[in-house]
Image 1: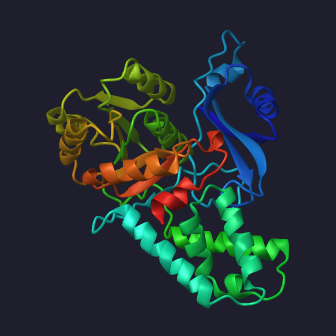
Image 2 (image 1 turned 180 degrees about the horizontal axis):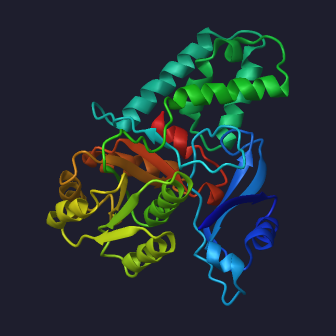
Image 3 (image 1 turned 120 degrees about the vertical axis):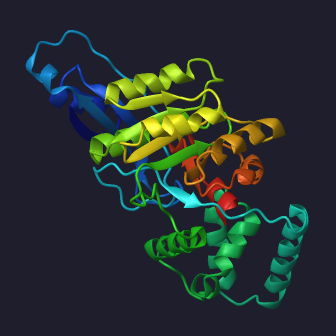
Length: 353
């Protein structure tokens, strides 16, 4: 199978390149929109990337029928490096444990009171204008004001600057400030043990199955690794068929689990794989029984690397509530999806910082 990555300023331009090089028999494995440069969805130029594959045999025979796999939403990358034509794996960030010592509104009230007191006692000429500009940029990206103000105050140069900053210098300092606030950013971390199990969990509709397919395409087709898929999503109509279609396109092993007790047997069948991707059913964060079922399933694979999947189209308050509810499953990282559908990405800061 021949796999290529194509980019363009529009979907049509990228697809034209696919047809020109691989022909009309090409199968679309992955599409995404991204911005080159910028920060939190700001200041960047939009581009489109398409990953396509075609059987080598089809390149030598007349075209019979065009098969196009369903387009898959883009998985968001937190503070991505400068974009190139090379595809990178979806990026996740470590989950900060939810604070339970006191109600959230009391913590926010105390923080706002502290910020107000400091503003009254530390006002300096020239500082407020730059600080306000930095806070305003973060607010435009949907970062909550207490978080934005707290971040800006962590940079003495940005907060206390008495002159004017050039736009590039201002943007660079603000990007660095947000990146430091997010902490360590990493994707799927293969630890050398085989098979390495990665489980995706989260509410319905955030793109877990699509993300599983994208990870499988990246590690099997781009990295040449032996990848197997396991799905426990037997609740959603056609969910198994969807993943089965992806597995057949990429020639991957797929195991179906109908009960938590069957997971160990399914893993045993995948012992020859380097990476096993586990797709779980979407669970409502407000349904305790469903969360307990998910905990029972994940308890069968304590060695699994667990990623909580959140959509960037989720509002700040709901995303924080989802993260708190799913913390009972002890996720290792948070994986953000649907960057191409989100106009602002401040939910990342609200969930992580």
